[in-house]
Length: 67
Image 1 (cartoon, rainbow, N blue to C red):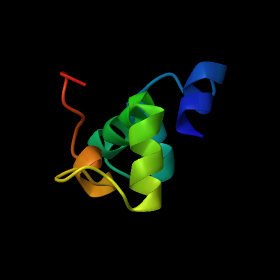
Image 2 (cartoon, one colour):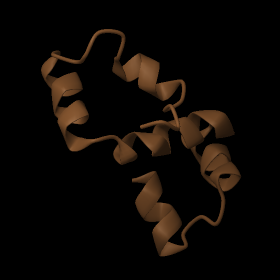
Image 3 (cartoon, rainbow, N blue to C red):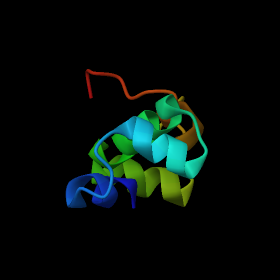
Image 4 (cartoon, rainbow, N blue to C red):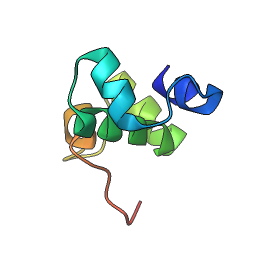
């Protein structure tokens, strides 16, 4: 939803989204990184079969650049 709001121009910045959603800007930024994960990793996380050390909570903290 936030990505769509940025793309549509409803919001121009992450700060605007964070303010409207009553959350921290960094939370929005981390959350918006999740769609850039490999679909295979997303499916594994949702199925509870994620690789060792990887979880949705872990990914919300920041996705490594090496991915």
